[in-house]
Amino acid sequence: MPVDASYLSKLQDYYAKHNVIPSYATIGKLWGISAKSWVANYVSRFKEEGYLKLAPDRRLGPGPRFFERRLARSPIRAGLPDPDPENGYDVVTIDNYLVKQPSRTSLIRVKGDSMMDAGILEGDLIVVEQQPTANIGDIVVAIVDDEFTIKYFERERGNFVLRPANKAYPVLRPKGKLEIFGVMVGLVRRVARR
Amino acid sequence: MPVDASYLSKLQDYYAKHNVIPSYATIGKLWGISAKSWVANYVSRFKEEGYLKLAPDRRLGPGPRFFERRLARSPIRAGLPDPDPENGYDVVTIDNYLVKQPSRTSLIRVKGDSMMDAGILEGDLIVVEQQPTANIGDIVVAIVDDEFTIKYFERERGNFVLRPANKAYPVLRPKGKLEIFGVMVGLVRRVARR
DNA sequence: GGCCTCACAGAACGATTGTTCTGTACCCTA
DNA sequence: TAGGGTACAGAACAATCGTTCTGTGAGGCC
Image 1 (cartoon, rainbow over the protein chains, first blue to last red):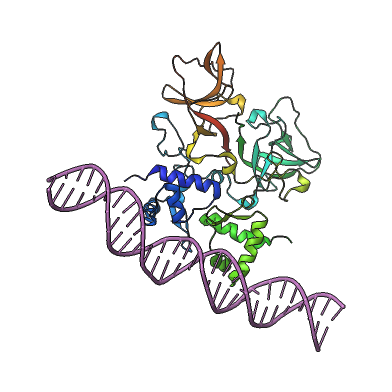
Image 2 (cartoon, protein in one colour):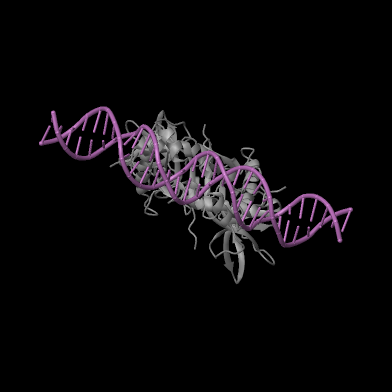
């Protein structure tokens, strides 16, 4: 028996707003059901299917599948939960997709268009894993003149250089040590709605 | 009085695992405090500072600052929680940053380089809000020949057209009706680590 | 040494929780 | 028309919740 999708999405919208799964009584109001027993019925069904689960202290919380966002691949199958070709399963939270180690991860807002040709635009948020070293070819966040700079990390005649992705900007050839703040592991862009 | 950071991070770790704020009794165990009254004391302090809050049905949940990821603005202040210049507050979860209505939001993986000049690269995930209409200038996901196409939505001599952001590709001038799947509201890119 | 404040412990309490059980209206099938 | 499942409503109940109140020991200050 398929899960009642509208009940689930009402819960998801509530959770998106408050980051909490409410009590059975409140879920009932949300769903337009006044019998807690019947709410319990649905909840246990959602639990079986992995959309909800109990925390160690028996509190009701979202399950692993609760955060699945549909990854629509082709229009024909649009609407169906669709396996993600990249990791073999559905994309879960975007946070989880991008952030592996929260404690070492920062966001940096991009200024300027020096990395335009790498698809990095002004205003984008760069997801950075903080670490003092990098591999050749990585996009790094370096500290130059007390400012963050996002550039390709490359080698040129034995020296490390910072190369922009825009022909209008020069390659940076830092004298002395090159201070690396971290390595870019992701990018987030929000598009303004009109 | 500054918030006790270790208490907060213990809560954050618990929440990261279970997506739920536990009861006062469980929080007490988590913190090594056996008096619920004193837990309540701390909780109310966290609530005042925006790390926790009550949902409409008085359930305890994470507050707006609970998910703060450091938005590092300048190297000098790197590491400190830093106000986000864009919305006047810290960036919260990336999910919340991008997704307003989970039930209407899908992800679509980009194929090809037809939107390259708009900073949309192959393999990126487009965050799409599903809706049958769009405004001129929006980047839309349209359905053409049973395939998703990401293009600018524009008007040309009274007709709607789909314009790529890459001179190597032609403008699409669909005959008959133009089926719009949704409007792009965000973009997520994961960079492969070496 | 006396007093005060801080940092918690512990108990009491009504409210709310999830569970369980019974009741009932409405199809659907035979 | 009878019978049975489905989809809820409603009530009862013990357990647990958050709140509040009182108690207590350790440290700081005068």
